[in-house]
Length: 220
Image 1: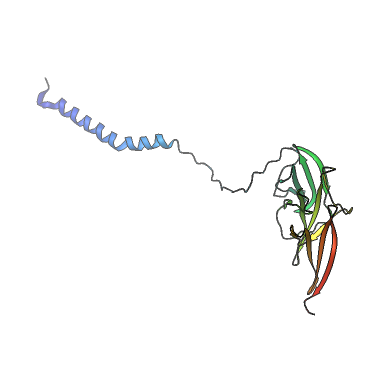
Image 2: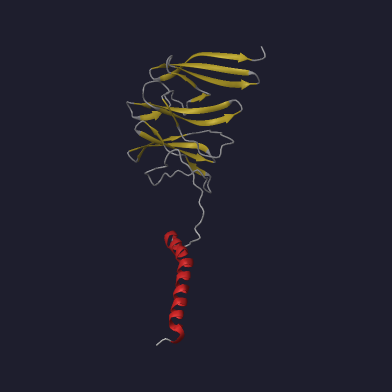
């Protein structure tokens, strides 16, 4: 029926070709199926965050890059039951927004800030400044070769608000040091070449009251 075994030889040749084709292409095909379609996906740089930036109120969004108007806002800080967001103009603080339960309960104006060399809106720093077990907060308002000046606001459990209890539009400390054991606050201010003024405050009725002032001259 098949003269000279021509058909079996053809079958053998075809079968061998199929085996060679399968051996060559099946691994590549399997890899392609497992890997999925090739897509030129954009490359992203992963940025590590120390904490999530979450602001529930739509009117306040943390923006570290300045808008065309020069405005930006800090990451939120939890101060007791409140959340504090600092708003900046050209990275200088201009206001502090106090939120509770996702609603704005207080807005504090920050005047006369003069921070230089910082390219971000610095968040509030949480501190029990007057040692009454209620967290307060302070915001850097000036800096330079002599250090940093902070404006601070103390929390009142009576009014449930933050304020400068001295009655001024701002309360400030330079290079503050807090001694919770002695319940004193020290402010160290360089006042000129070789001159340093050290103010020590004690706490009276929840307020910082100047206890002593020491002026030193390195050249004396």
